[in-house]
Image 1 (cartoon, one colour):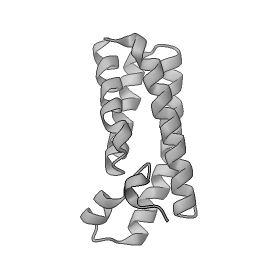
Image 2 (tube, helix red, strand yellow):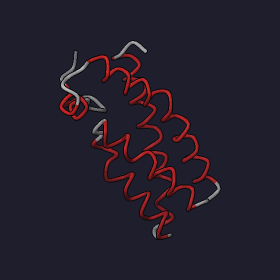
Image 3 (cartoon, one colour):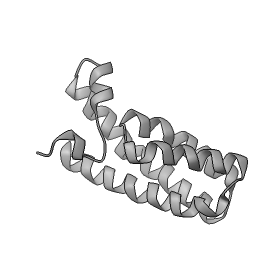
Image 4 (cartoon, one colour):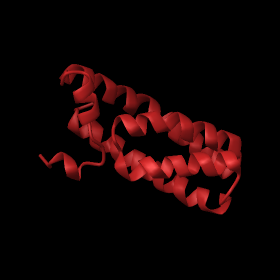
Length: 118
C-alpha cells in the first residue's frame, strides 16, 4: 500500500479526533462517497449556467468534506471558488477551477472505494 503522503486524501484528522476507530472512519468515507458526487454535480451544473450564488453555496457545502479528508490540493482552491463566486470576481477562472475540483473529487472517490472496499 502507498504511504498516506501519496494519497489524494488523508484520514489522519478523523483518526486523531475519533481515537482511530476504523469503523467510524469507514462510515465517514462511505458518507463522503455517497453524498459528495451530488454536490460535485450540482457545483458543475451551477458553474455551467454561471449561477454564482449556487456555485458559492455548493463550494461552501463541499469545503467541510474537503477539510475533513485533508484533500490538500483542493483546500485553497475550493475557498477561492467560494469567495470568487460570492464576490463575483475573477469569474473567468471559476470554470477551470471547478473542473479541476470535480475531476479530483471523482479520483478521490475512486481511491476511497478501492481503499475501503465500498
